[in-house]
Length: 118
Image (cartoon, rainbow, N blue to C red):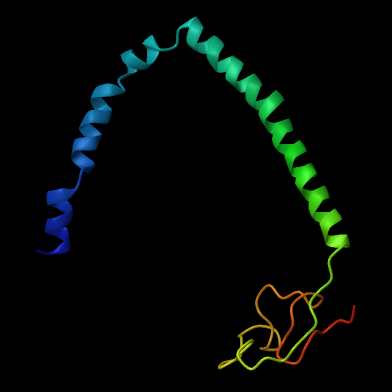
């Protein structure tokens, strides 16, 4: 069975369009624009702007501060040139070929060790 026949036979596109055209007519949409619906819409818009977004902002600040506090007490591990780590069968197509795409010279070791001393 070809892809075209399969997609025609098992596609719900036409059926879905028919259901959408039936359910979302202009008259039905206008009937849902009552004052109660608009009042509820306003309420949830205010809840989003005045509770949800500041809550996300405060949670982000809390998490970032915790991360920065934790970072002060940690040190990077000593470099040990294990043979099974950092195997490069091909060079990376960026940089000098030995660094990964999101390379941090302070924290990520290359095949020869860390680039920046602590």
